[in-house]
Length: 316
Length: 227
Image 1 (tube, each protein chain N blue to C red):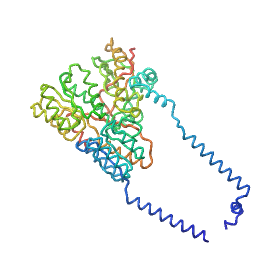
Image 2: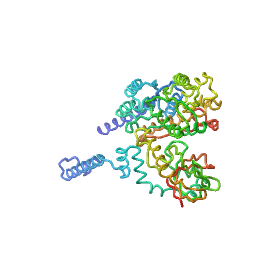
Image 3: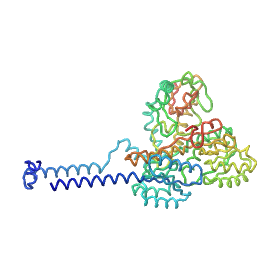
Image 4: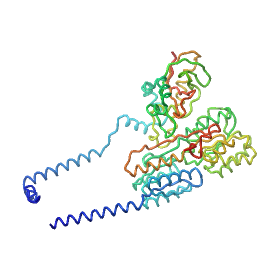
């Protein structure tokens, strides 16, 4: 009889304990960190906000961190995240090499990291990397560029952040086409760090040295808009062709208005949503992920601009 | 009631020889199973081809990797090409469904890659391409002067982005493969060709299924044989 009562008591306590655990789980959502390289660029704002939105829809609590394009700031965020009970990280790195140490620290702490848009030069520590196919996108821009200039003329190039692989994938994709045409000459190439204001200053300076240039290829849309401002100020908005890359709203509008010739539509919303879904799958037990998932980039010109909205296809 | 069974009495008697024997047997079995599990998970298996690939990647540069596959795997690859008539019929009937079954799709997004082959007459020659007829409504342009992008790389299926630490190396594969195709396949074959010649060809194509049908298709040649 004693044993029987003892067993019943144990069972009752066990059930109460379990009920308590379940209740506590319902009250607190698991946290997922969204770490973005900079929120000073509308493209990255869309990436971050879409990731937060999808994470919240999936039933988690999303917290957004801005690394301000500063690897040290990014490391501070990771230190905070690793000690604050986050279950996963959706990550847009500041530097392909410099960010590896942060991802390794997260992996060592058992926290999966899903890179978005920018890669790290390591295939062992991130759980998955969702990246735009920048190279192919800029091959398409290069072909459009050659067609519009009839294979001859002079141009300038604005590069992005030199530590970002996207900068070089875009430039190499563009040059893989344009360098085949010996009558197309690059007069100057300079980095403007993907920044609109810096691009305006750099373009002003390059135009002073090369006033009769025919076109400017910019490694992203923010720089394309900065370059446009410089071209406008120089009174050459009708004569210098401008090309960007991203699919930002202001550039899509500028293509409609004939101010910019073309851009490459990346799909930050697709990348952000994919990363959020993969994190959810991981937290539900899946472990087998493709290390790198390229996302196709579409060429947007005046001929097809009506099919596109800001950062996605129209109607999506 | 269950307290009074023979079994429970025997269980209560710790020195019962039968019980001792069973306990020993269970302990040994558990130890053996634990040892087997430990041995099994102390190594992993992978297919031999995958292992060979990983070894290649560690020792070869992107260019050497292209050379290796071009010299060792091209012939086998060409035999997997889809006859162009089957390809056009399948895509015309259901582009999306056909792509899902037969295409290589290395990207999230709209593009699919195929290897196709055919035997056709050359309708026209320009300095950039050979024009052939793929079906009643579609012409093919076999590129002979400029090759851009990742069509050849992605259609072969030889390479996987996940195997490269950075995508710049992955894209270098395309640059080098395209150069090799131009120098060894396209340009030599194009010399001396004239309109009306019969050509056997194998090539890679990039398709956006949502945009099919198309009136013309660019083909990256992987092999050309003049009949």
